[in-house]
Length: 279
Image 1 (cartoon, rainbow, N blue to C red):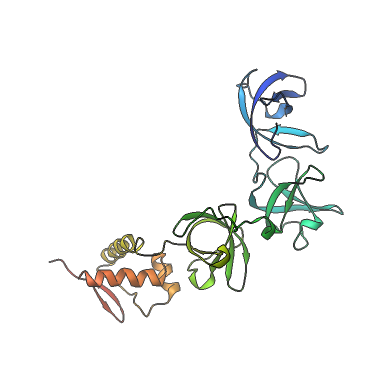
Image 2: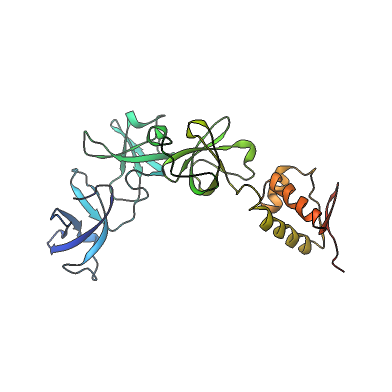
């Protein structure tokens, strides 16, 4: 069975004037057009190709890499809008179709949107949608508190940013816990900070707890040594200033310098922190 909108490992069966015909283990065939054939490809070789539908809705194979695959999310650009819907650039010859019914807001050429790609059961066509909430699942979680996760930022809200977690769940990054610039479409790493009622995920952009304090403390000591034993950062410094200098949150900074102070390695004053000489 061919998997439309996904990668398939297929065997080269025969060469024709229009390209090579590939088949799966069940004998179902698909054309790999001439433009994707290389000298290394031989009859009976098994190759990895992406299978999608051509302009006549026939399965076709390509060795090109799409920017999105079926049942996943990606940040794509709108190339054109017609009376039928919008068309997005997903890295292949045929653009990706977004019907009007699947647009949460009307699309315009040149805009970028986070979309989900699925196979429409009625038309058997690959379709993209910006109605992201519909395709996220939090009822059965595959993550736990403290896990490192992959994030795709998809929506700014009054509370912060909604993020797609591991291409599967919905998570929230609170605005007051963001200490660097992020924007819709960013792909980055994060951590599951808390699982709330109804499996709502609170996401942090940095590790929580003491596991981050020890390496942060070493980082601060290194910065102190580079700066001649003094850093003009303290409890009075703004979160933005601390992040700009050290790329950590103020909360983590305070935990780290508190530990260094108790260990007798630094002095803390209103104007900053000083390294205590080991002499």
